[in-house]
Image (cartoon, helix red, strand yellow):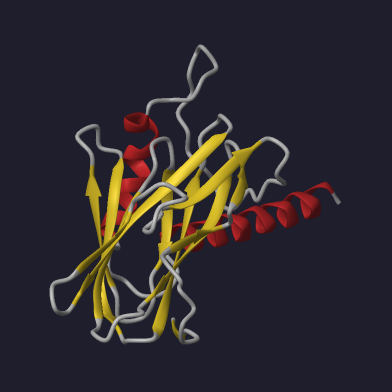
Length: 206
C-alpha cells in the first residue's frame, strides 16, 4: 500500500514496533517515506544478526529479492518498485527475535530514480539513523506465526545457518508475489485441519 506523507514531516525509514519480546515471532512493519522530488525505486533492508524472517507481505507493484549470507541465513532483502514523491510505502514481514535482550538496528538504503542513495544506517543520534527495536523480557509476546528454531542440546540459540535455512528457501520461492506469503496460508491450512480433526475425534467418542 502507498500512502501520502504530510509535507515537512522529516521522516526516515522506520521499523516498528520500537519494542519487542525476546525469542518471539513478531509482525514488523517498515515505513518508507519519499521526501525527494524523484521516485524512490529501490529499498534495501539489512536484517540484524539473530533475526529469522519467515514471511513477507509486499506492497502491490513491488518485487522482492532475498540476499543470503555465506551461512545461508538472510542477510538483506531488496524491494524494487516505484514510490512517488511525498508518498510512503509500507512493507510488513514476520521475523523471530533473538533469545537475548538488546537492540536490533535495521539498516536501510533508499535508491532513487536519479541514482541518489539515502542510507539510514547511522547511530540513533546521527542525521541518518537506522531504525532501532529494543528487545526486552517484559514486553508482551506476539507469537505471530511459528518460528522454526533448531533444537540445541545446550539449550541455547541455534546458529542462524541452521534456523533460517528452511524458511529462507520457502520465501525465496515466492519472492515478488503480491499479497500474503506462504506462512499465512500454511498457518490457515494447519488451523483448519486441526479443527476438523477435533470434530472427528468428538464424533468418534460419542
